[in-house]
Image (cartoon, rainbow, N blue to C red; front, side):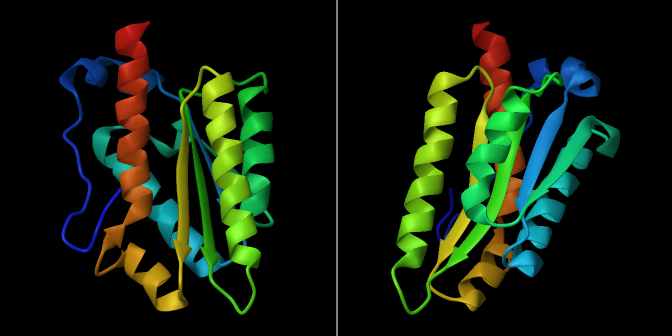
Length: 165
């Protein structure tokens, strides 16, 4: 979504504005690397509030780690509550083994599969960094807040869904 020279940011489509008070968003946050994921969640919430979505319209769920995001997103999709979008927030930092590769791949595949199978946009906001400093830079540091960008992505996908349907 972003590089060192470009932060993703969009203008809210005017045709979405009449629906803002009706939208319901779920934010699912991994507790692992909690300082990073909390900052990402705060960035997402701040952006949603900036466009007029109140905290009452946001459902918050927490899972132990990034791997569990797909399962929780599937539960949210199949719950009795209808969500216009689900934002999955996690952070996987490279360690001494290849564990990060397996977790990142599994979560990306799980969320991709849910997006294909379900009729609700599920947003992938999972940092996959080489070190903690890179994660900090992307969760409110020099490279912006990818949580905020995930909220923008959710809004764009909600708009796309409403436009097509």
